[in-house]
Amino acid sequence: MSQEPKILKIERIRDSRKVRLRLSGEFRSHHLDQVKAEISRGEPIALDLEEVDLVDIEAIRFLNAREDEGISVLHCSPYIQEWMSRERQEEKARTDWR
Image (tube, rainbow, N blue to C red):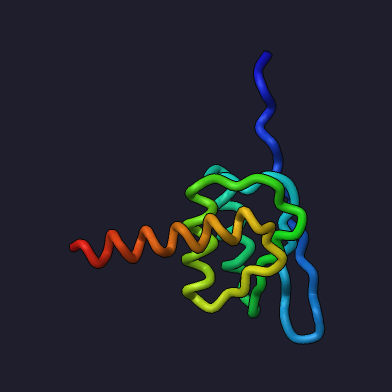
């Protein structure tokens, strides 16, 4: 049995002052271009991960990079928050080593 790749749903929600992208489903490396395209449409953005249930390492690195650019990452599950934090620490250790 082959498994169908899970989809990532992206919904643009306009609040009073900014646009929030609500992501739902699995967020994996093959979705990065899709999310980048939505971000590049402009306007201040926050990424809402409340309905994301699975990520991979490339998605974690992408989320950390967006935070570094000033884009808020909202409503992460505890495991995603922990993984983002751990990856930041490992990246810092790799950078300090050089």
